[in-house]
Length: 334
Figure 1 (cartoon, rainbow, N blue to C red):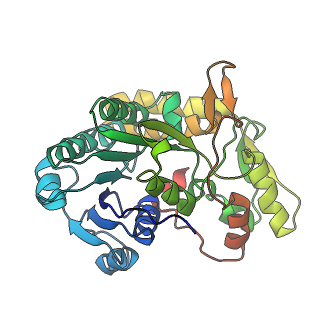
Figure 2: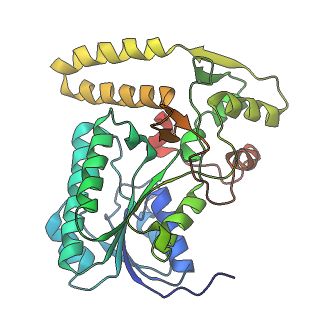
């Protein structure tokens, strides 16, 4: 049994996302006094959205407001009360430059300012491992806030997870329907050590108590060896008892698409966002979600820490049997 940890008063931002929910569940299990500051959700399928949120966050206090409005963060979120820690699992939905700077940077700056004004001692941030080699707007926005957080004087824990299970489940249906698994190049250009929502939520919650995670940048992956897209495809076919079939897309094909979208984007602003989406796609197709080793100038699975017990392949087995299949929502692009 784990040592009983002192209960803390925690304000959680971004609690309605998949990682946010997993973090909330872990905090509630650990006995912390949790307040979740969320957007009013009128836009969720099925109309029962508020109830879905409240049942998922049973045991926490839920407060509604606008995360992009500094007045609302202070008034509706902190509500003139004191908290020991703020945990943010907020992230921009699309990764478009405007969205990224508004959420990944500015909303976080406003939350940090409110945290300082309310005497918060510790700020835990969910970032991303891909900020190690920043080439995209959302990576620059996340890094800009990381830098501000480190300089703030608060105790910080910056969590940079590798790939999520959800983002590696986009081809389940394709393969089930007998279509080939799509890969870039030979499917071995990249690798990752994917981490489940539950294991990541547990790691983030653990940052409050575990002092070795204080004032640290924390890259984190799941258990087991790093896996390539080709291995993911092979395993899905193995579960179906079929011969693996792959369709290779040359990376140059993405470059052509990006070039075209860039040109059109100069004239049509909405297309510029599509160009950024294509650049994000290209990034994930060519860069591993592992720790970058500056000495050897390559991604290094050995240097990428592991946490938790759940493996992607075990989840593939469950999903193939129709259990707990992830709702891809807006992440289907990855």
